[in-house]
Length: 123
Image (cartoon, rainbow, N blue to C red; front, top):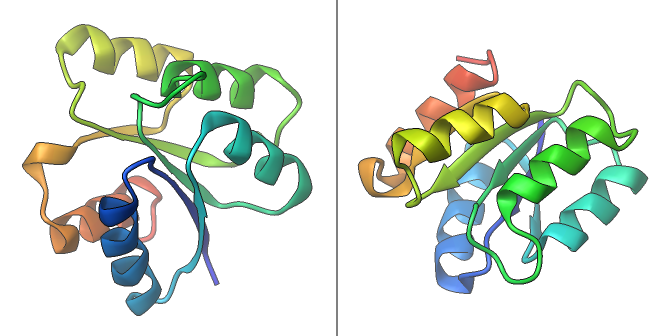
């Protein structure tokens, strides 16, 4: 089973996506901060991280950089999921090692599921 960690500090949004991914056969874990997802990635096998950019203390750019340069599993797929979707933001995330970028405002939960599967080469 594919393991995804949803990193989202808005609990209402997080629960909607947790339910959708669980119904689609993913094993879902939740994290509300960059530090939390980094701790999970050190301890557990993770296939995909769906990562918000705007978070307290450590933003998604810092998390991506840490995951790619800090001795973590290089096979983890990092998919940025954010409303911060200017061209510069997308380029920065991709240059830091993200595997994909999804604008929150452009996808409903079902479309998000299809796009995550596509980006993770599971579609």
